[in-house]
Image (tube, rainbow, N blue to C red; front, side, top):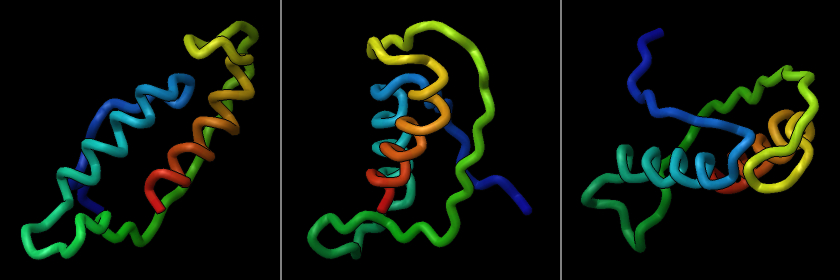
Length: 79
């Protein structure tokens, strides 16, 4: 398929996830959307697989935030 939306996303950074979602919603928002309803997302595939030690910029375990919390926040904000 053809990629119709590309924007940087760092799952180890909560501000990056929030920025991605905000940009995604602005990109796909239409003028006739009532009450600022978020655009419909039909498919979301979450995939990560890092195994690094360290601390994220948010002060959490880097591996845990990237592989779990980042995906959770991304999915929650897009729904």
